[in-house]
Amino acid sequence: MNTTAAAAEAKVTVATIRTWCRRGAVAAVKQAGRWIIDTASLAARIAIGAMRARKAAMTTTGTIIQMPDGDFGILGDAGILAAAFENGTPVTPTNEPYAGDRIYLGITRETRGDYGRTVETVGLAYTKDDGQAVYRIDTQRLASDAPAFYAVLEEMWDREEAAEAAAMSQDRDYFNPRYM
Image 1 (cartoon, rainbow, N blue to C red):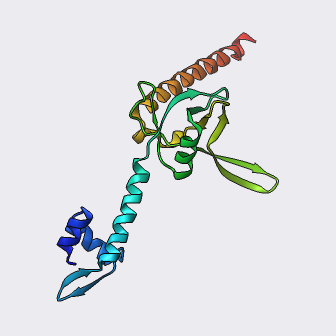
Image 2: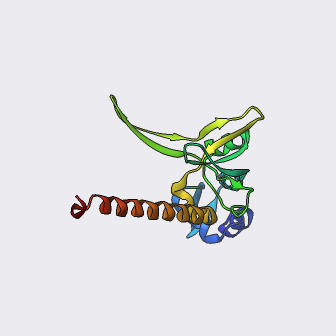
């Protein structure tokens, strides 16, 4: 099969097919300066692309909540959220104004102990009796994928920073040597 026919079958550009040939993503040989692509290899590559597309397109729904420990999470169907966490696919919250945001699950925590440094990704926060679960939100990936939620978090962080600055100012006034 030539590159034009392969591109039509794979629904990609001819340039993409040539790149796949050069990189070995599909089995192909060059004859008289033209790529001849193995049809079985192309079918396998198309199947891989379809699996990736399904994985990337898998979005679920849930509600953003703030947990008692201050972290944020998504409340939704336990099975769907577990699959999204395991596959690394984003979820789409249902509550406004976050609908449409793509939020990834899991936070990475580093702990130090007797045996050195441990890094773990924590997803599940807790489950409920009704088949619902809460998974922690990966706040490191929000800026580009979840602009509405990130904007709310930035406002919260700014308020916390202003409150901390005000407290520091009061401390400076209290400990000012001229009052002692």
